[in-house]
Length: 173
Image (cartoon, rainbow, N blue to C red):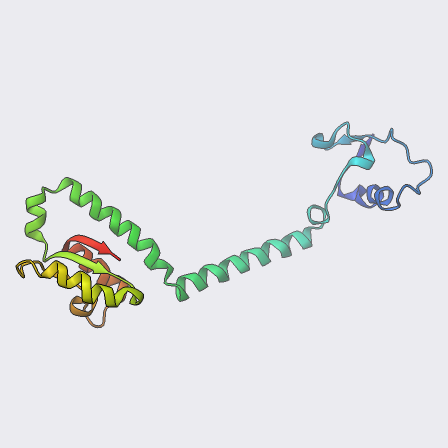
């Protein structure tokens, strides 16, 4: 019986890569240890280089962790990843608050009837169609818009969160 561990890897690989040229290689060579390969023929055992070479394994893990760290740092700094985590939390908190607050009380605590969020691609339609149609009724509909109601000096994310909190409804175009 053989101990089919990394120490025996080169011997096992010898038969696999010699393309059957080993004379006297017996099918009766059986692994006894470790238990996950016990009873397996020696020539059928696969011991990858990565699992047998500790230095290579450490370098691979460090490289993967470095790439992952750089990717997370890039997303956090460049793509404002924190905003994408804060917005769903803020939305969930607002929904929870709405459910437990009476509608009339909620209406009395808000400053605007609606907050409108839109992209630059949709800005002409929002400014020429949506806003005039919402505000034309009797002039009492107060719409919160980024260009009118954002506080200078605060981040976009902070302004959006503040406007959502001060508005009864939110409209995302």
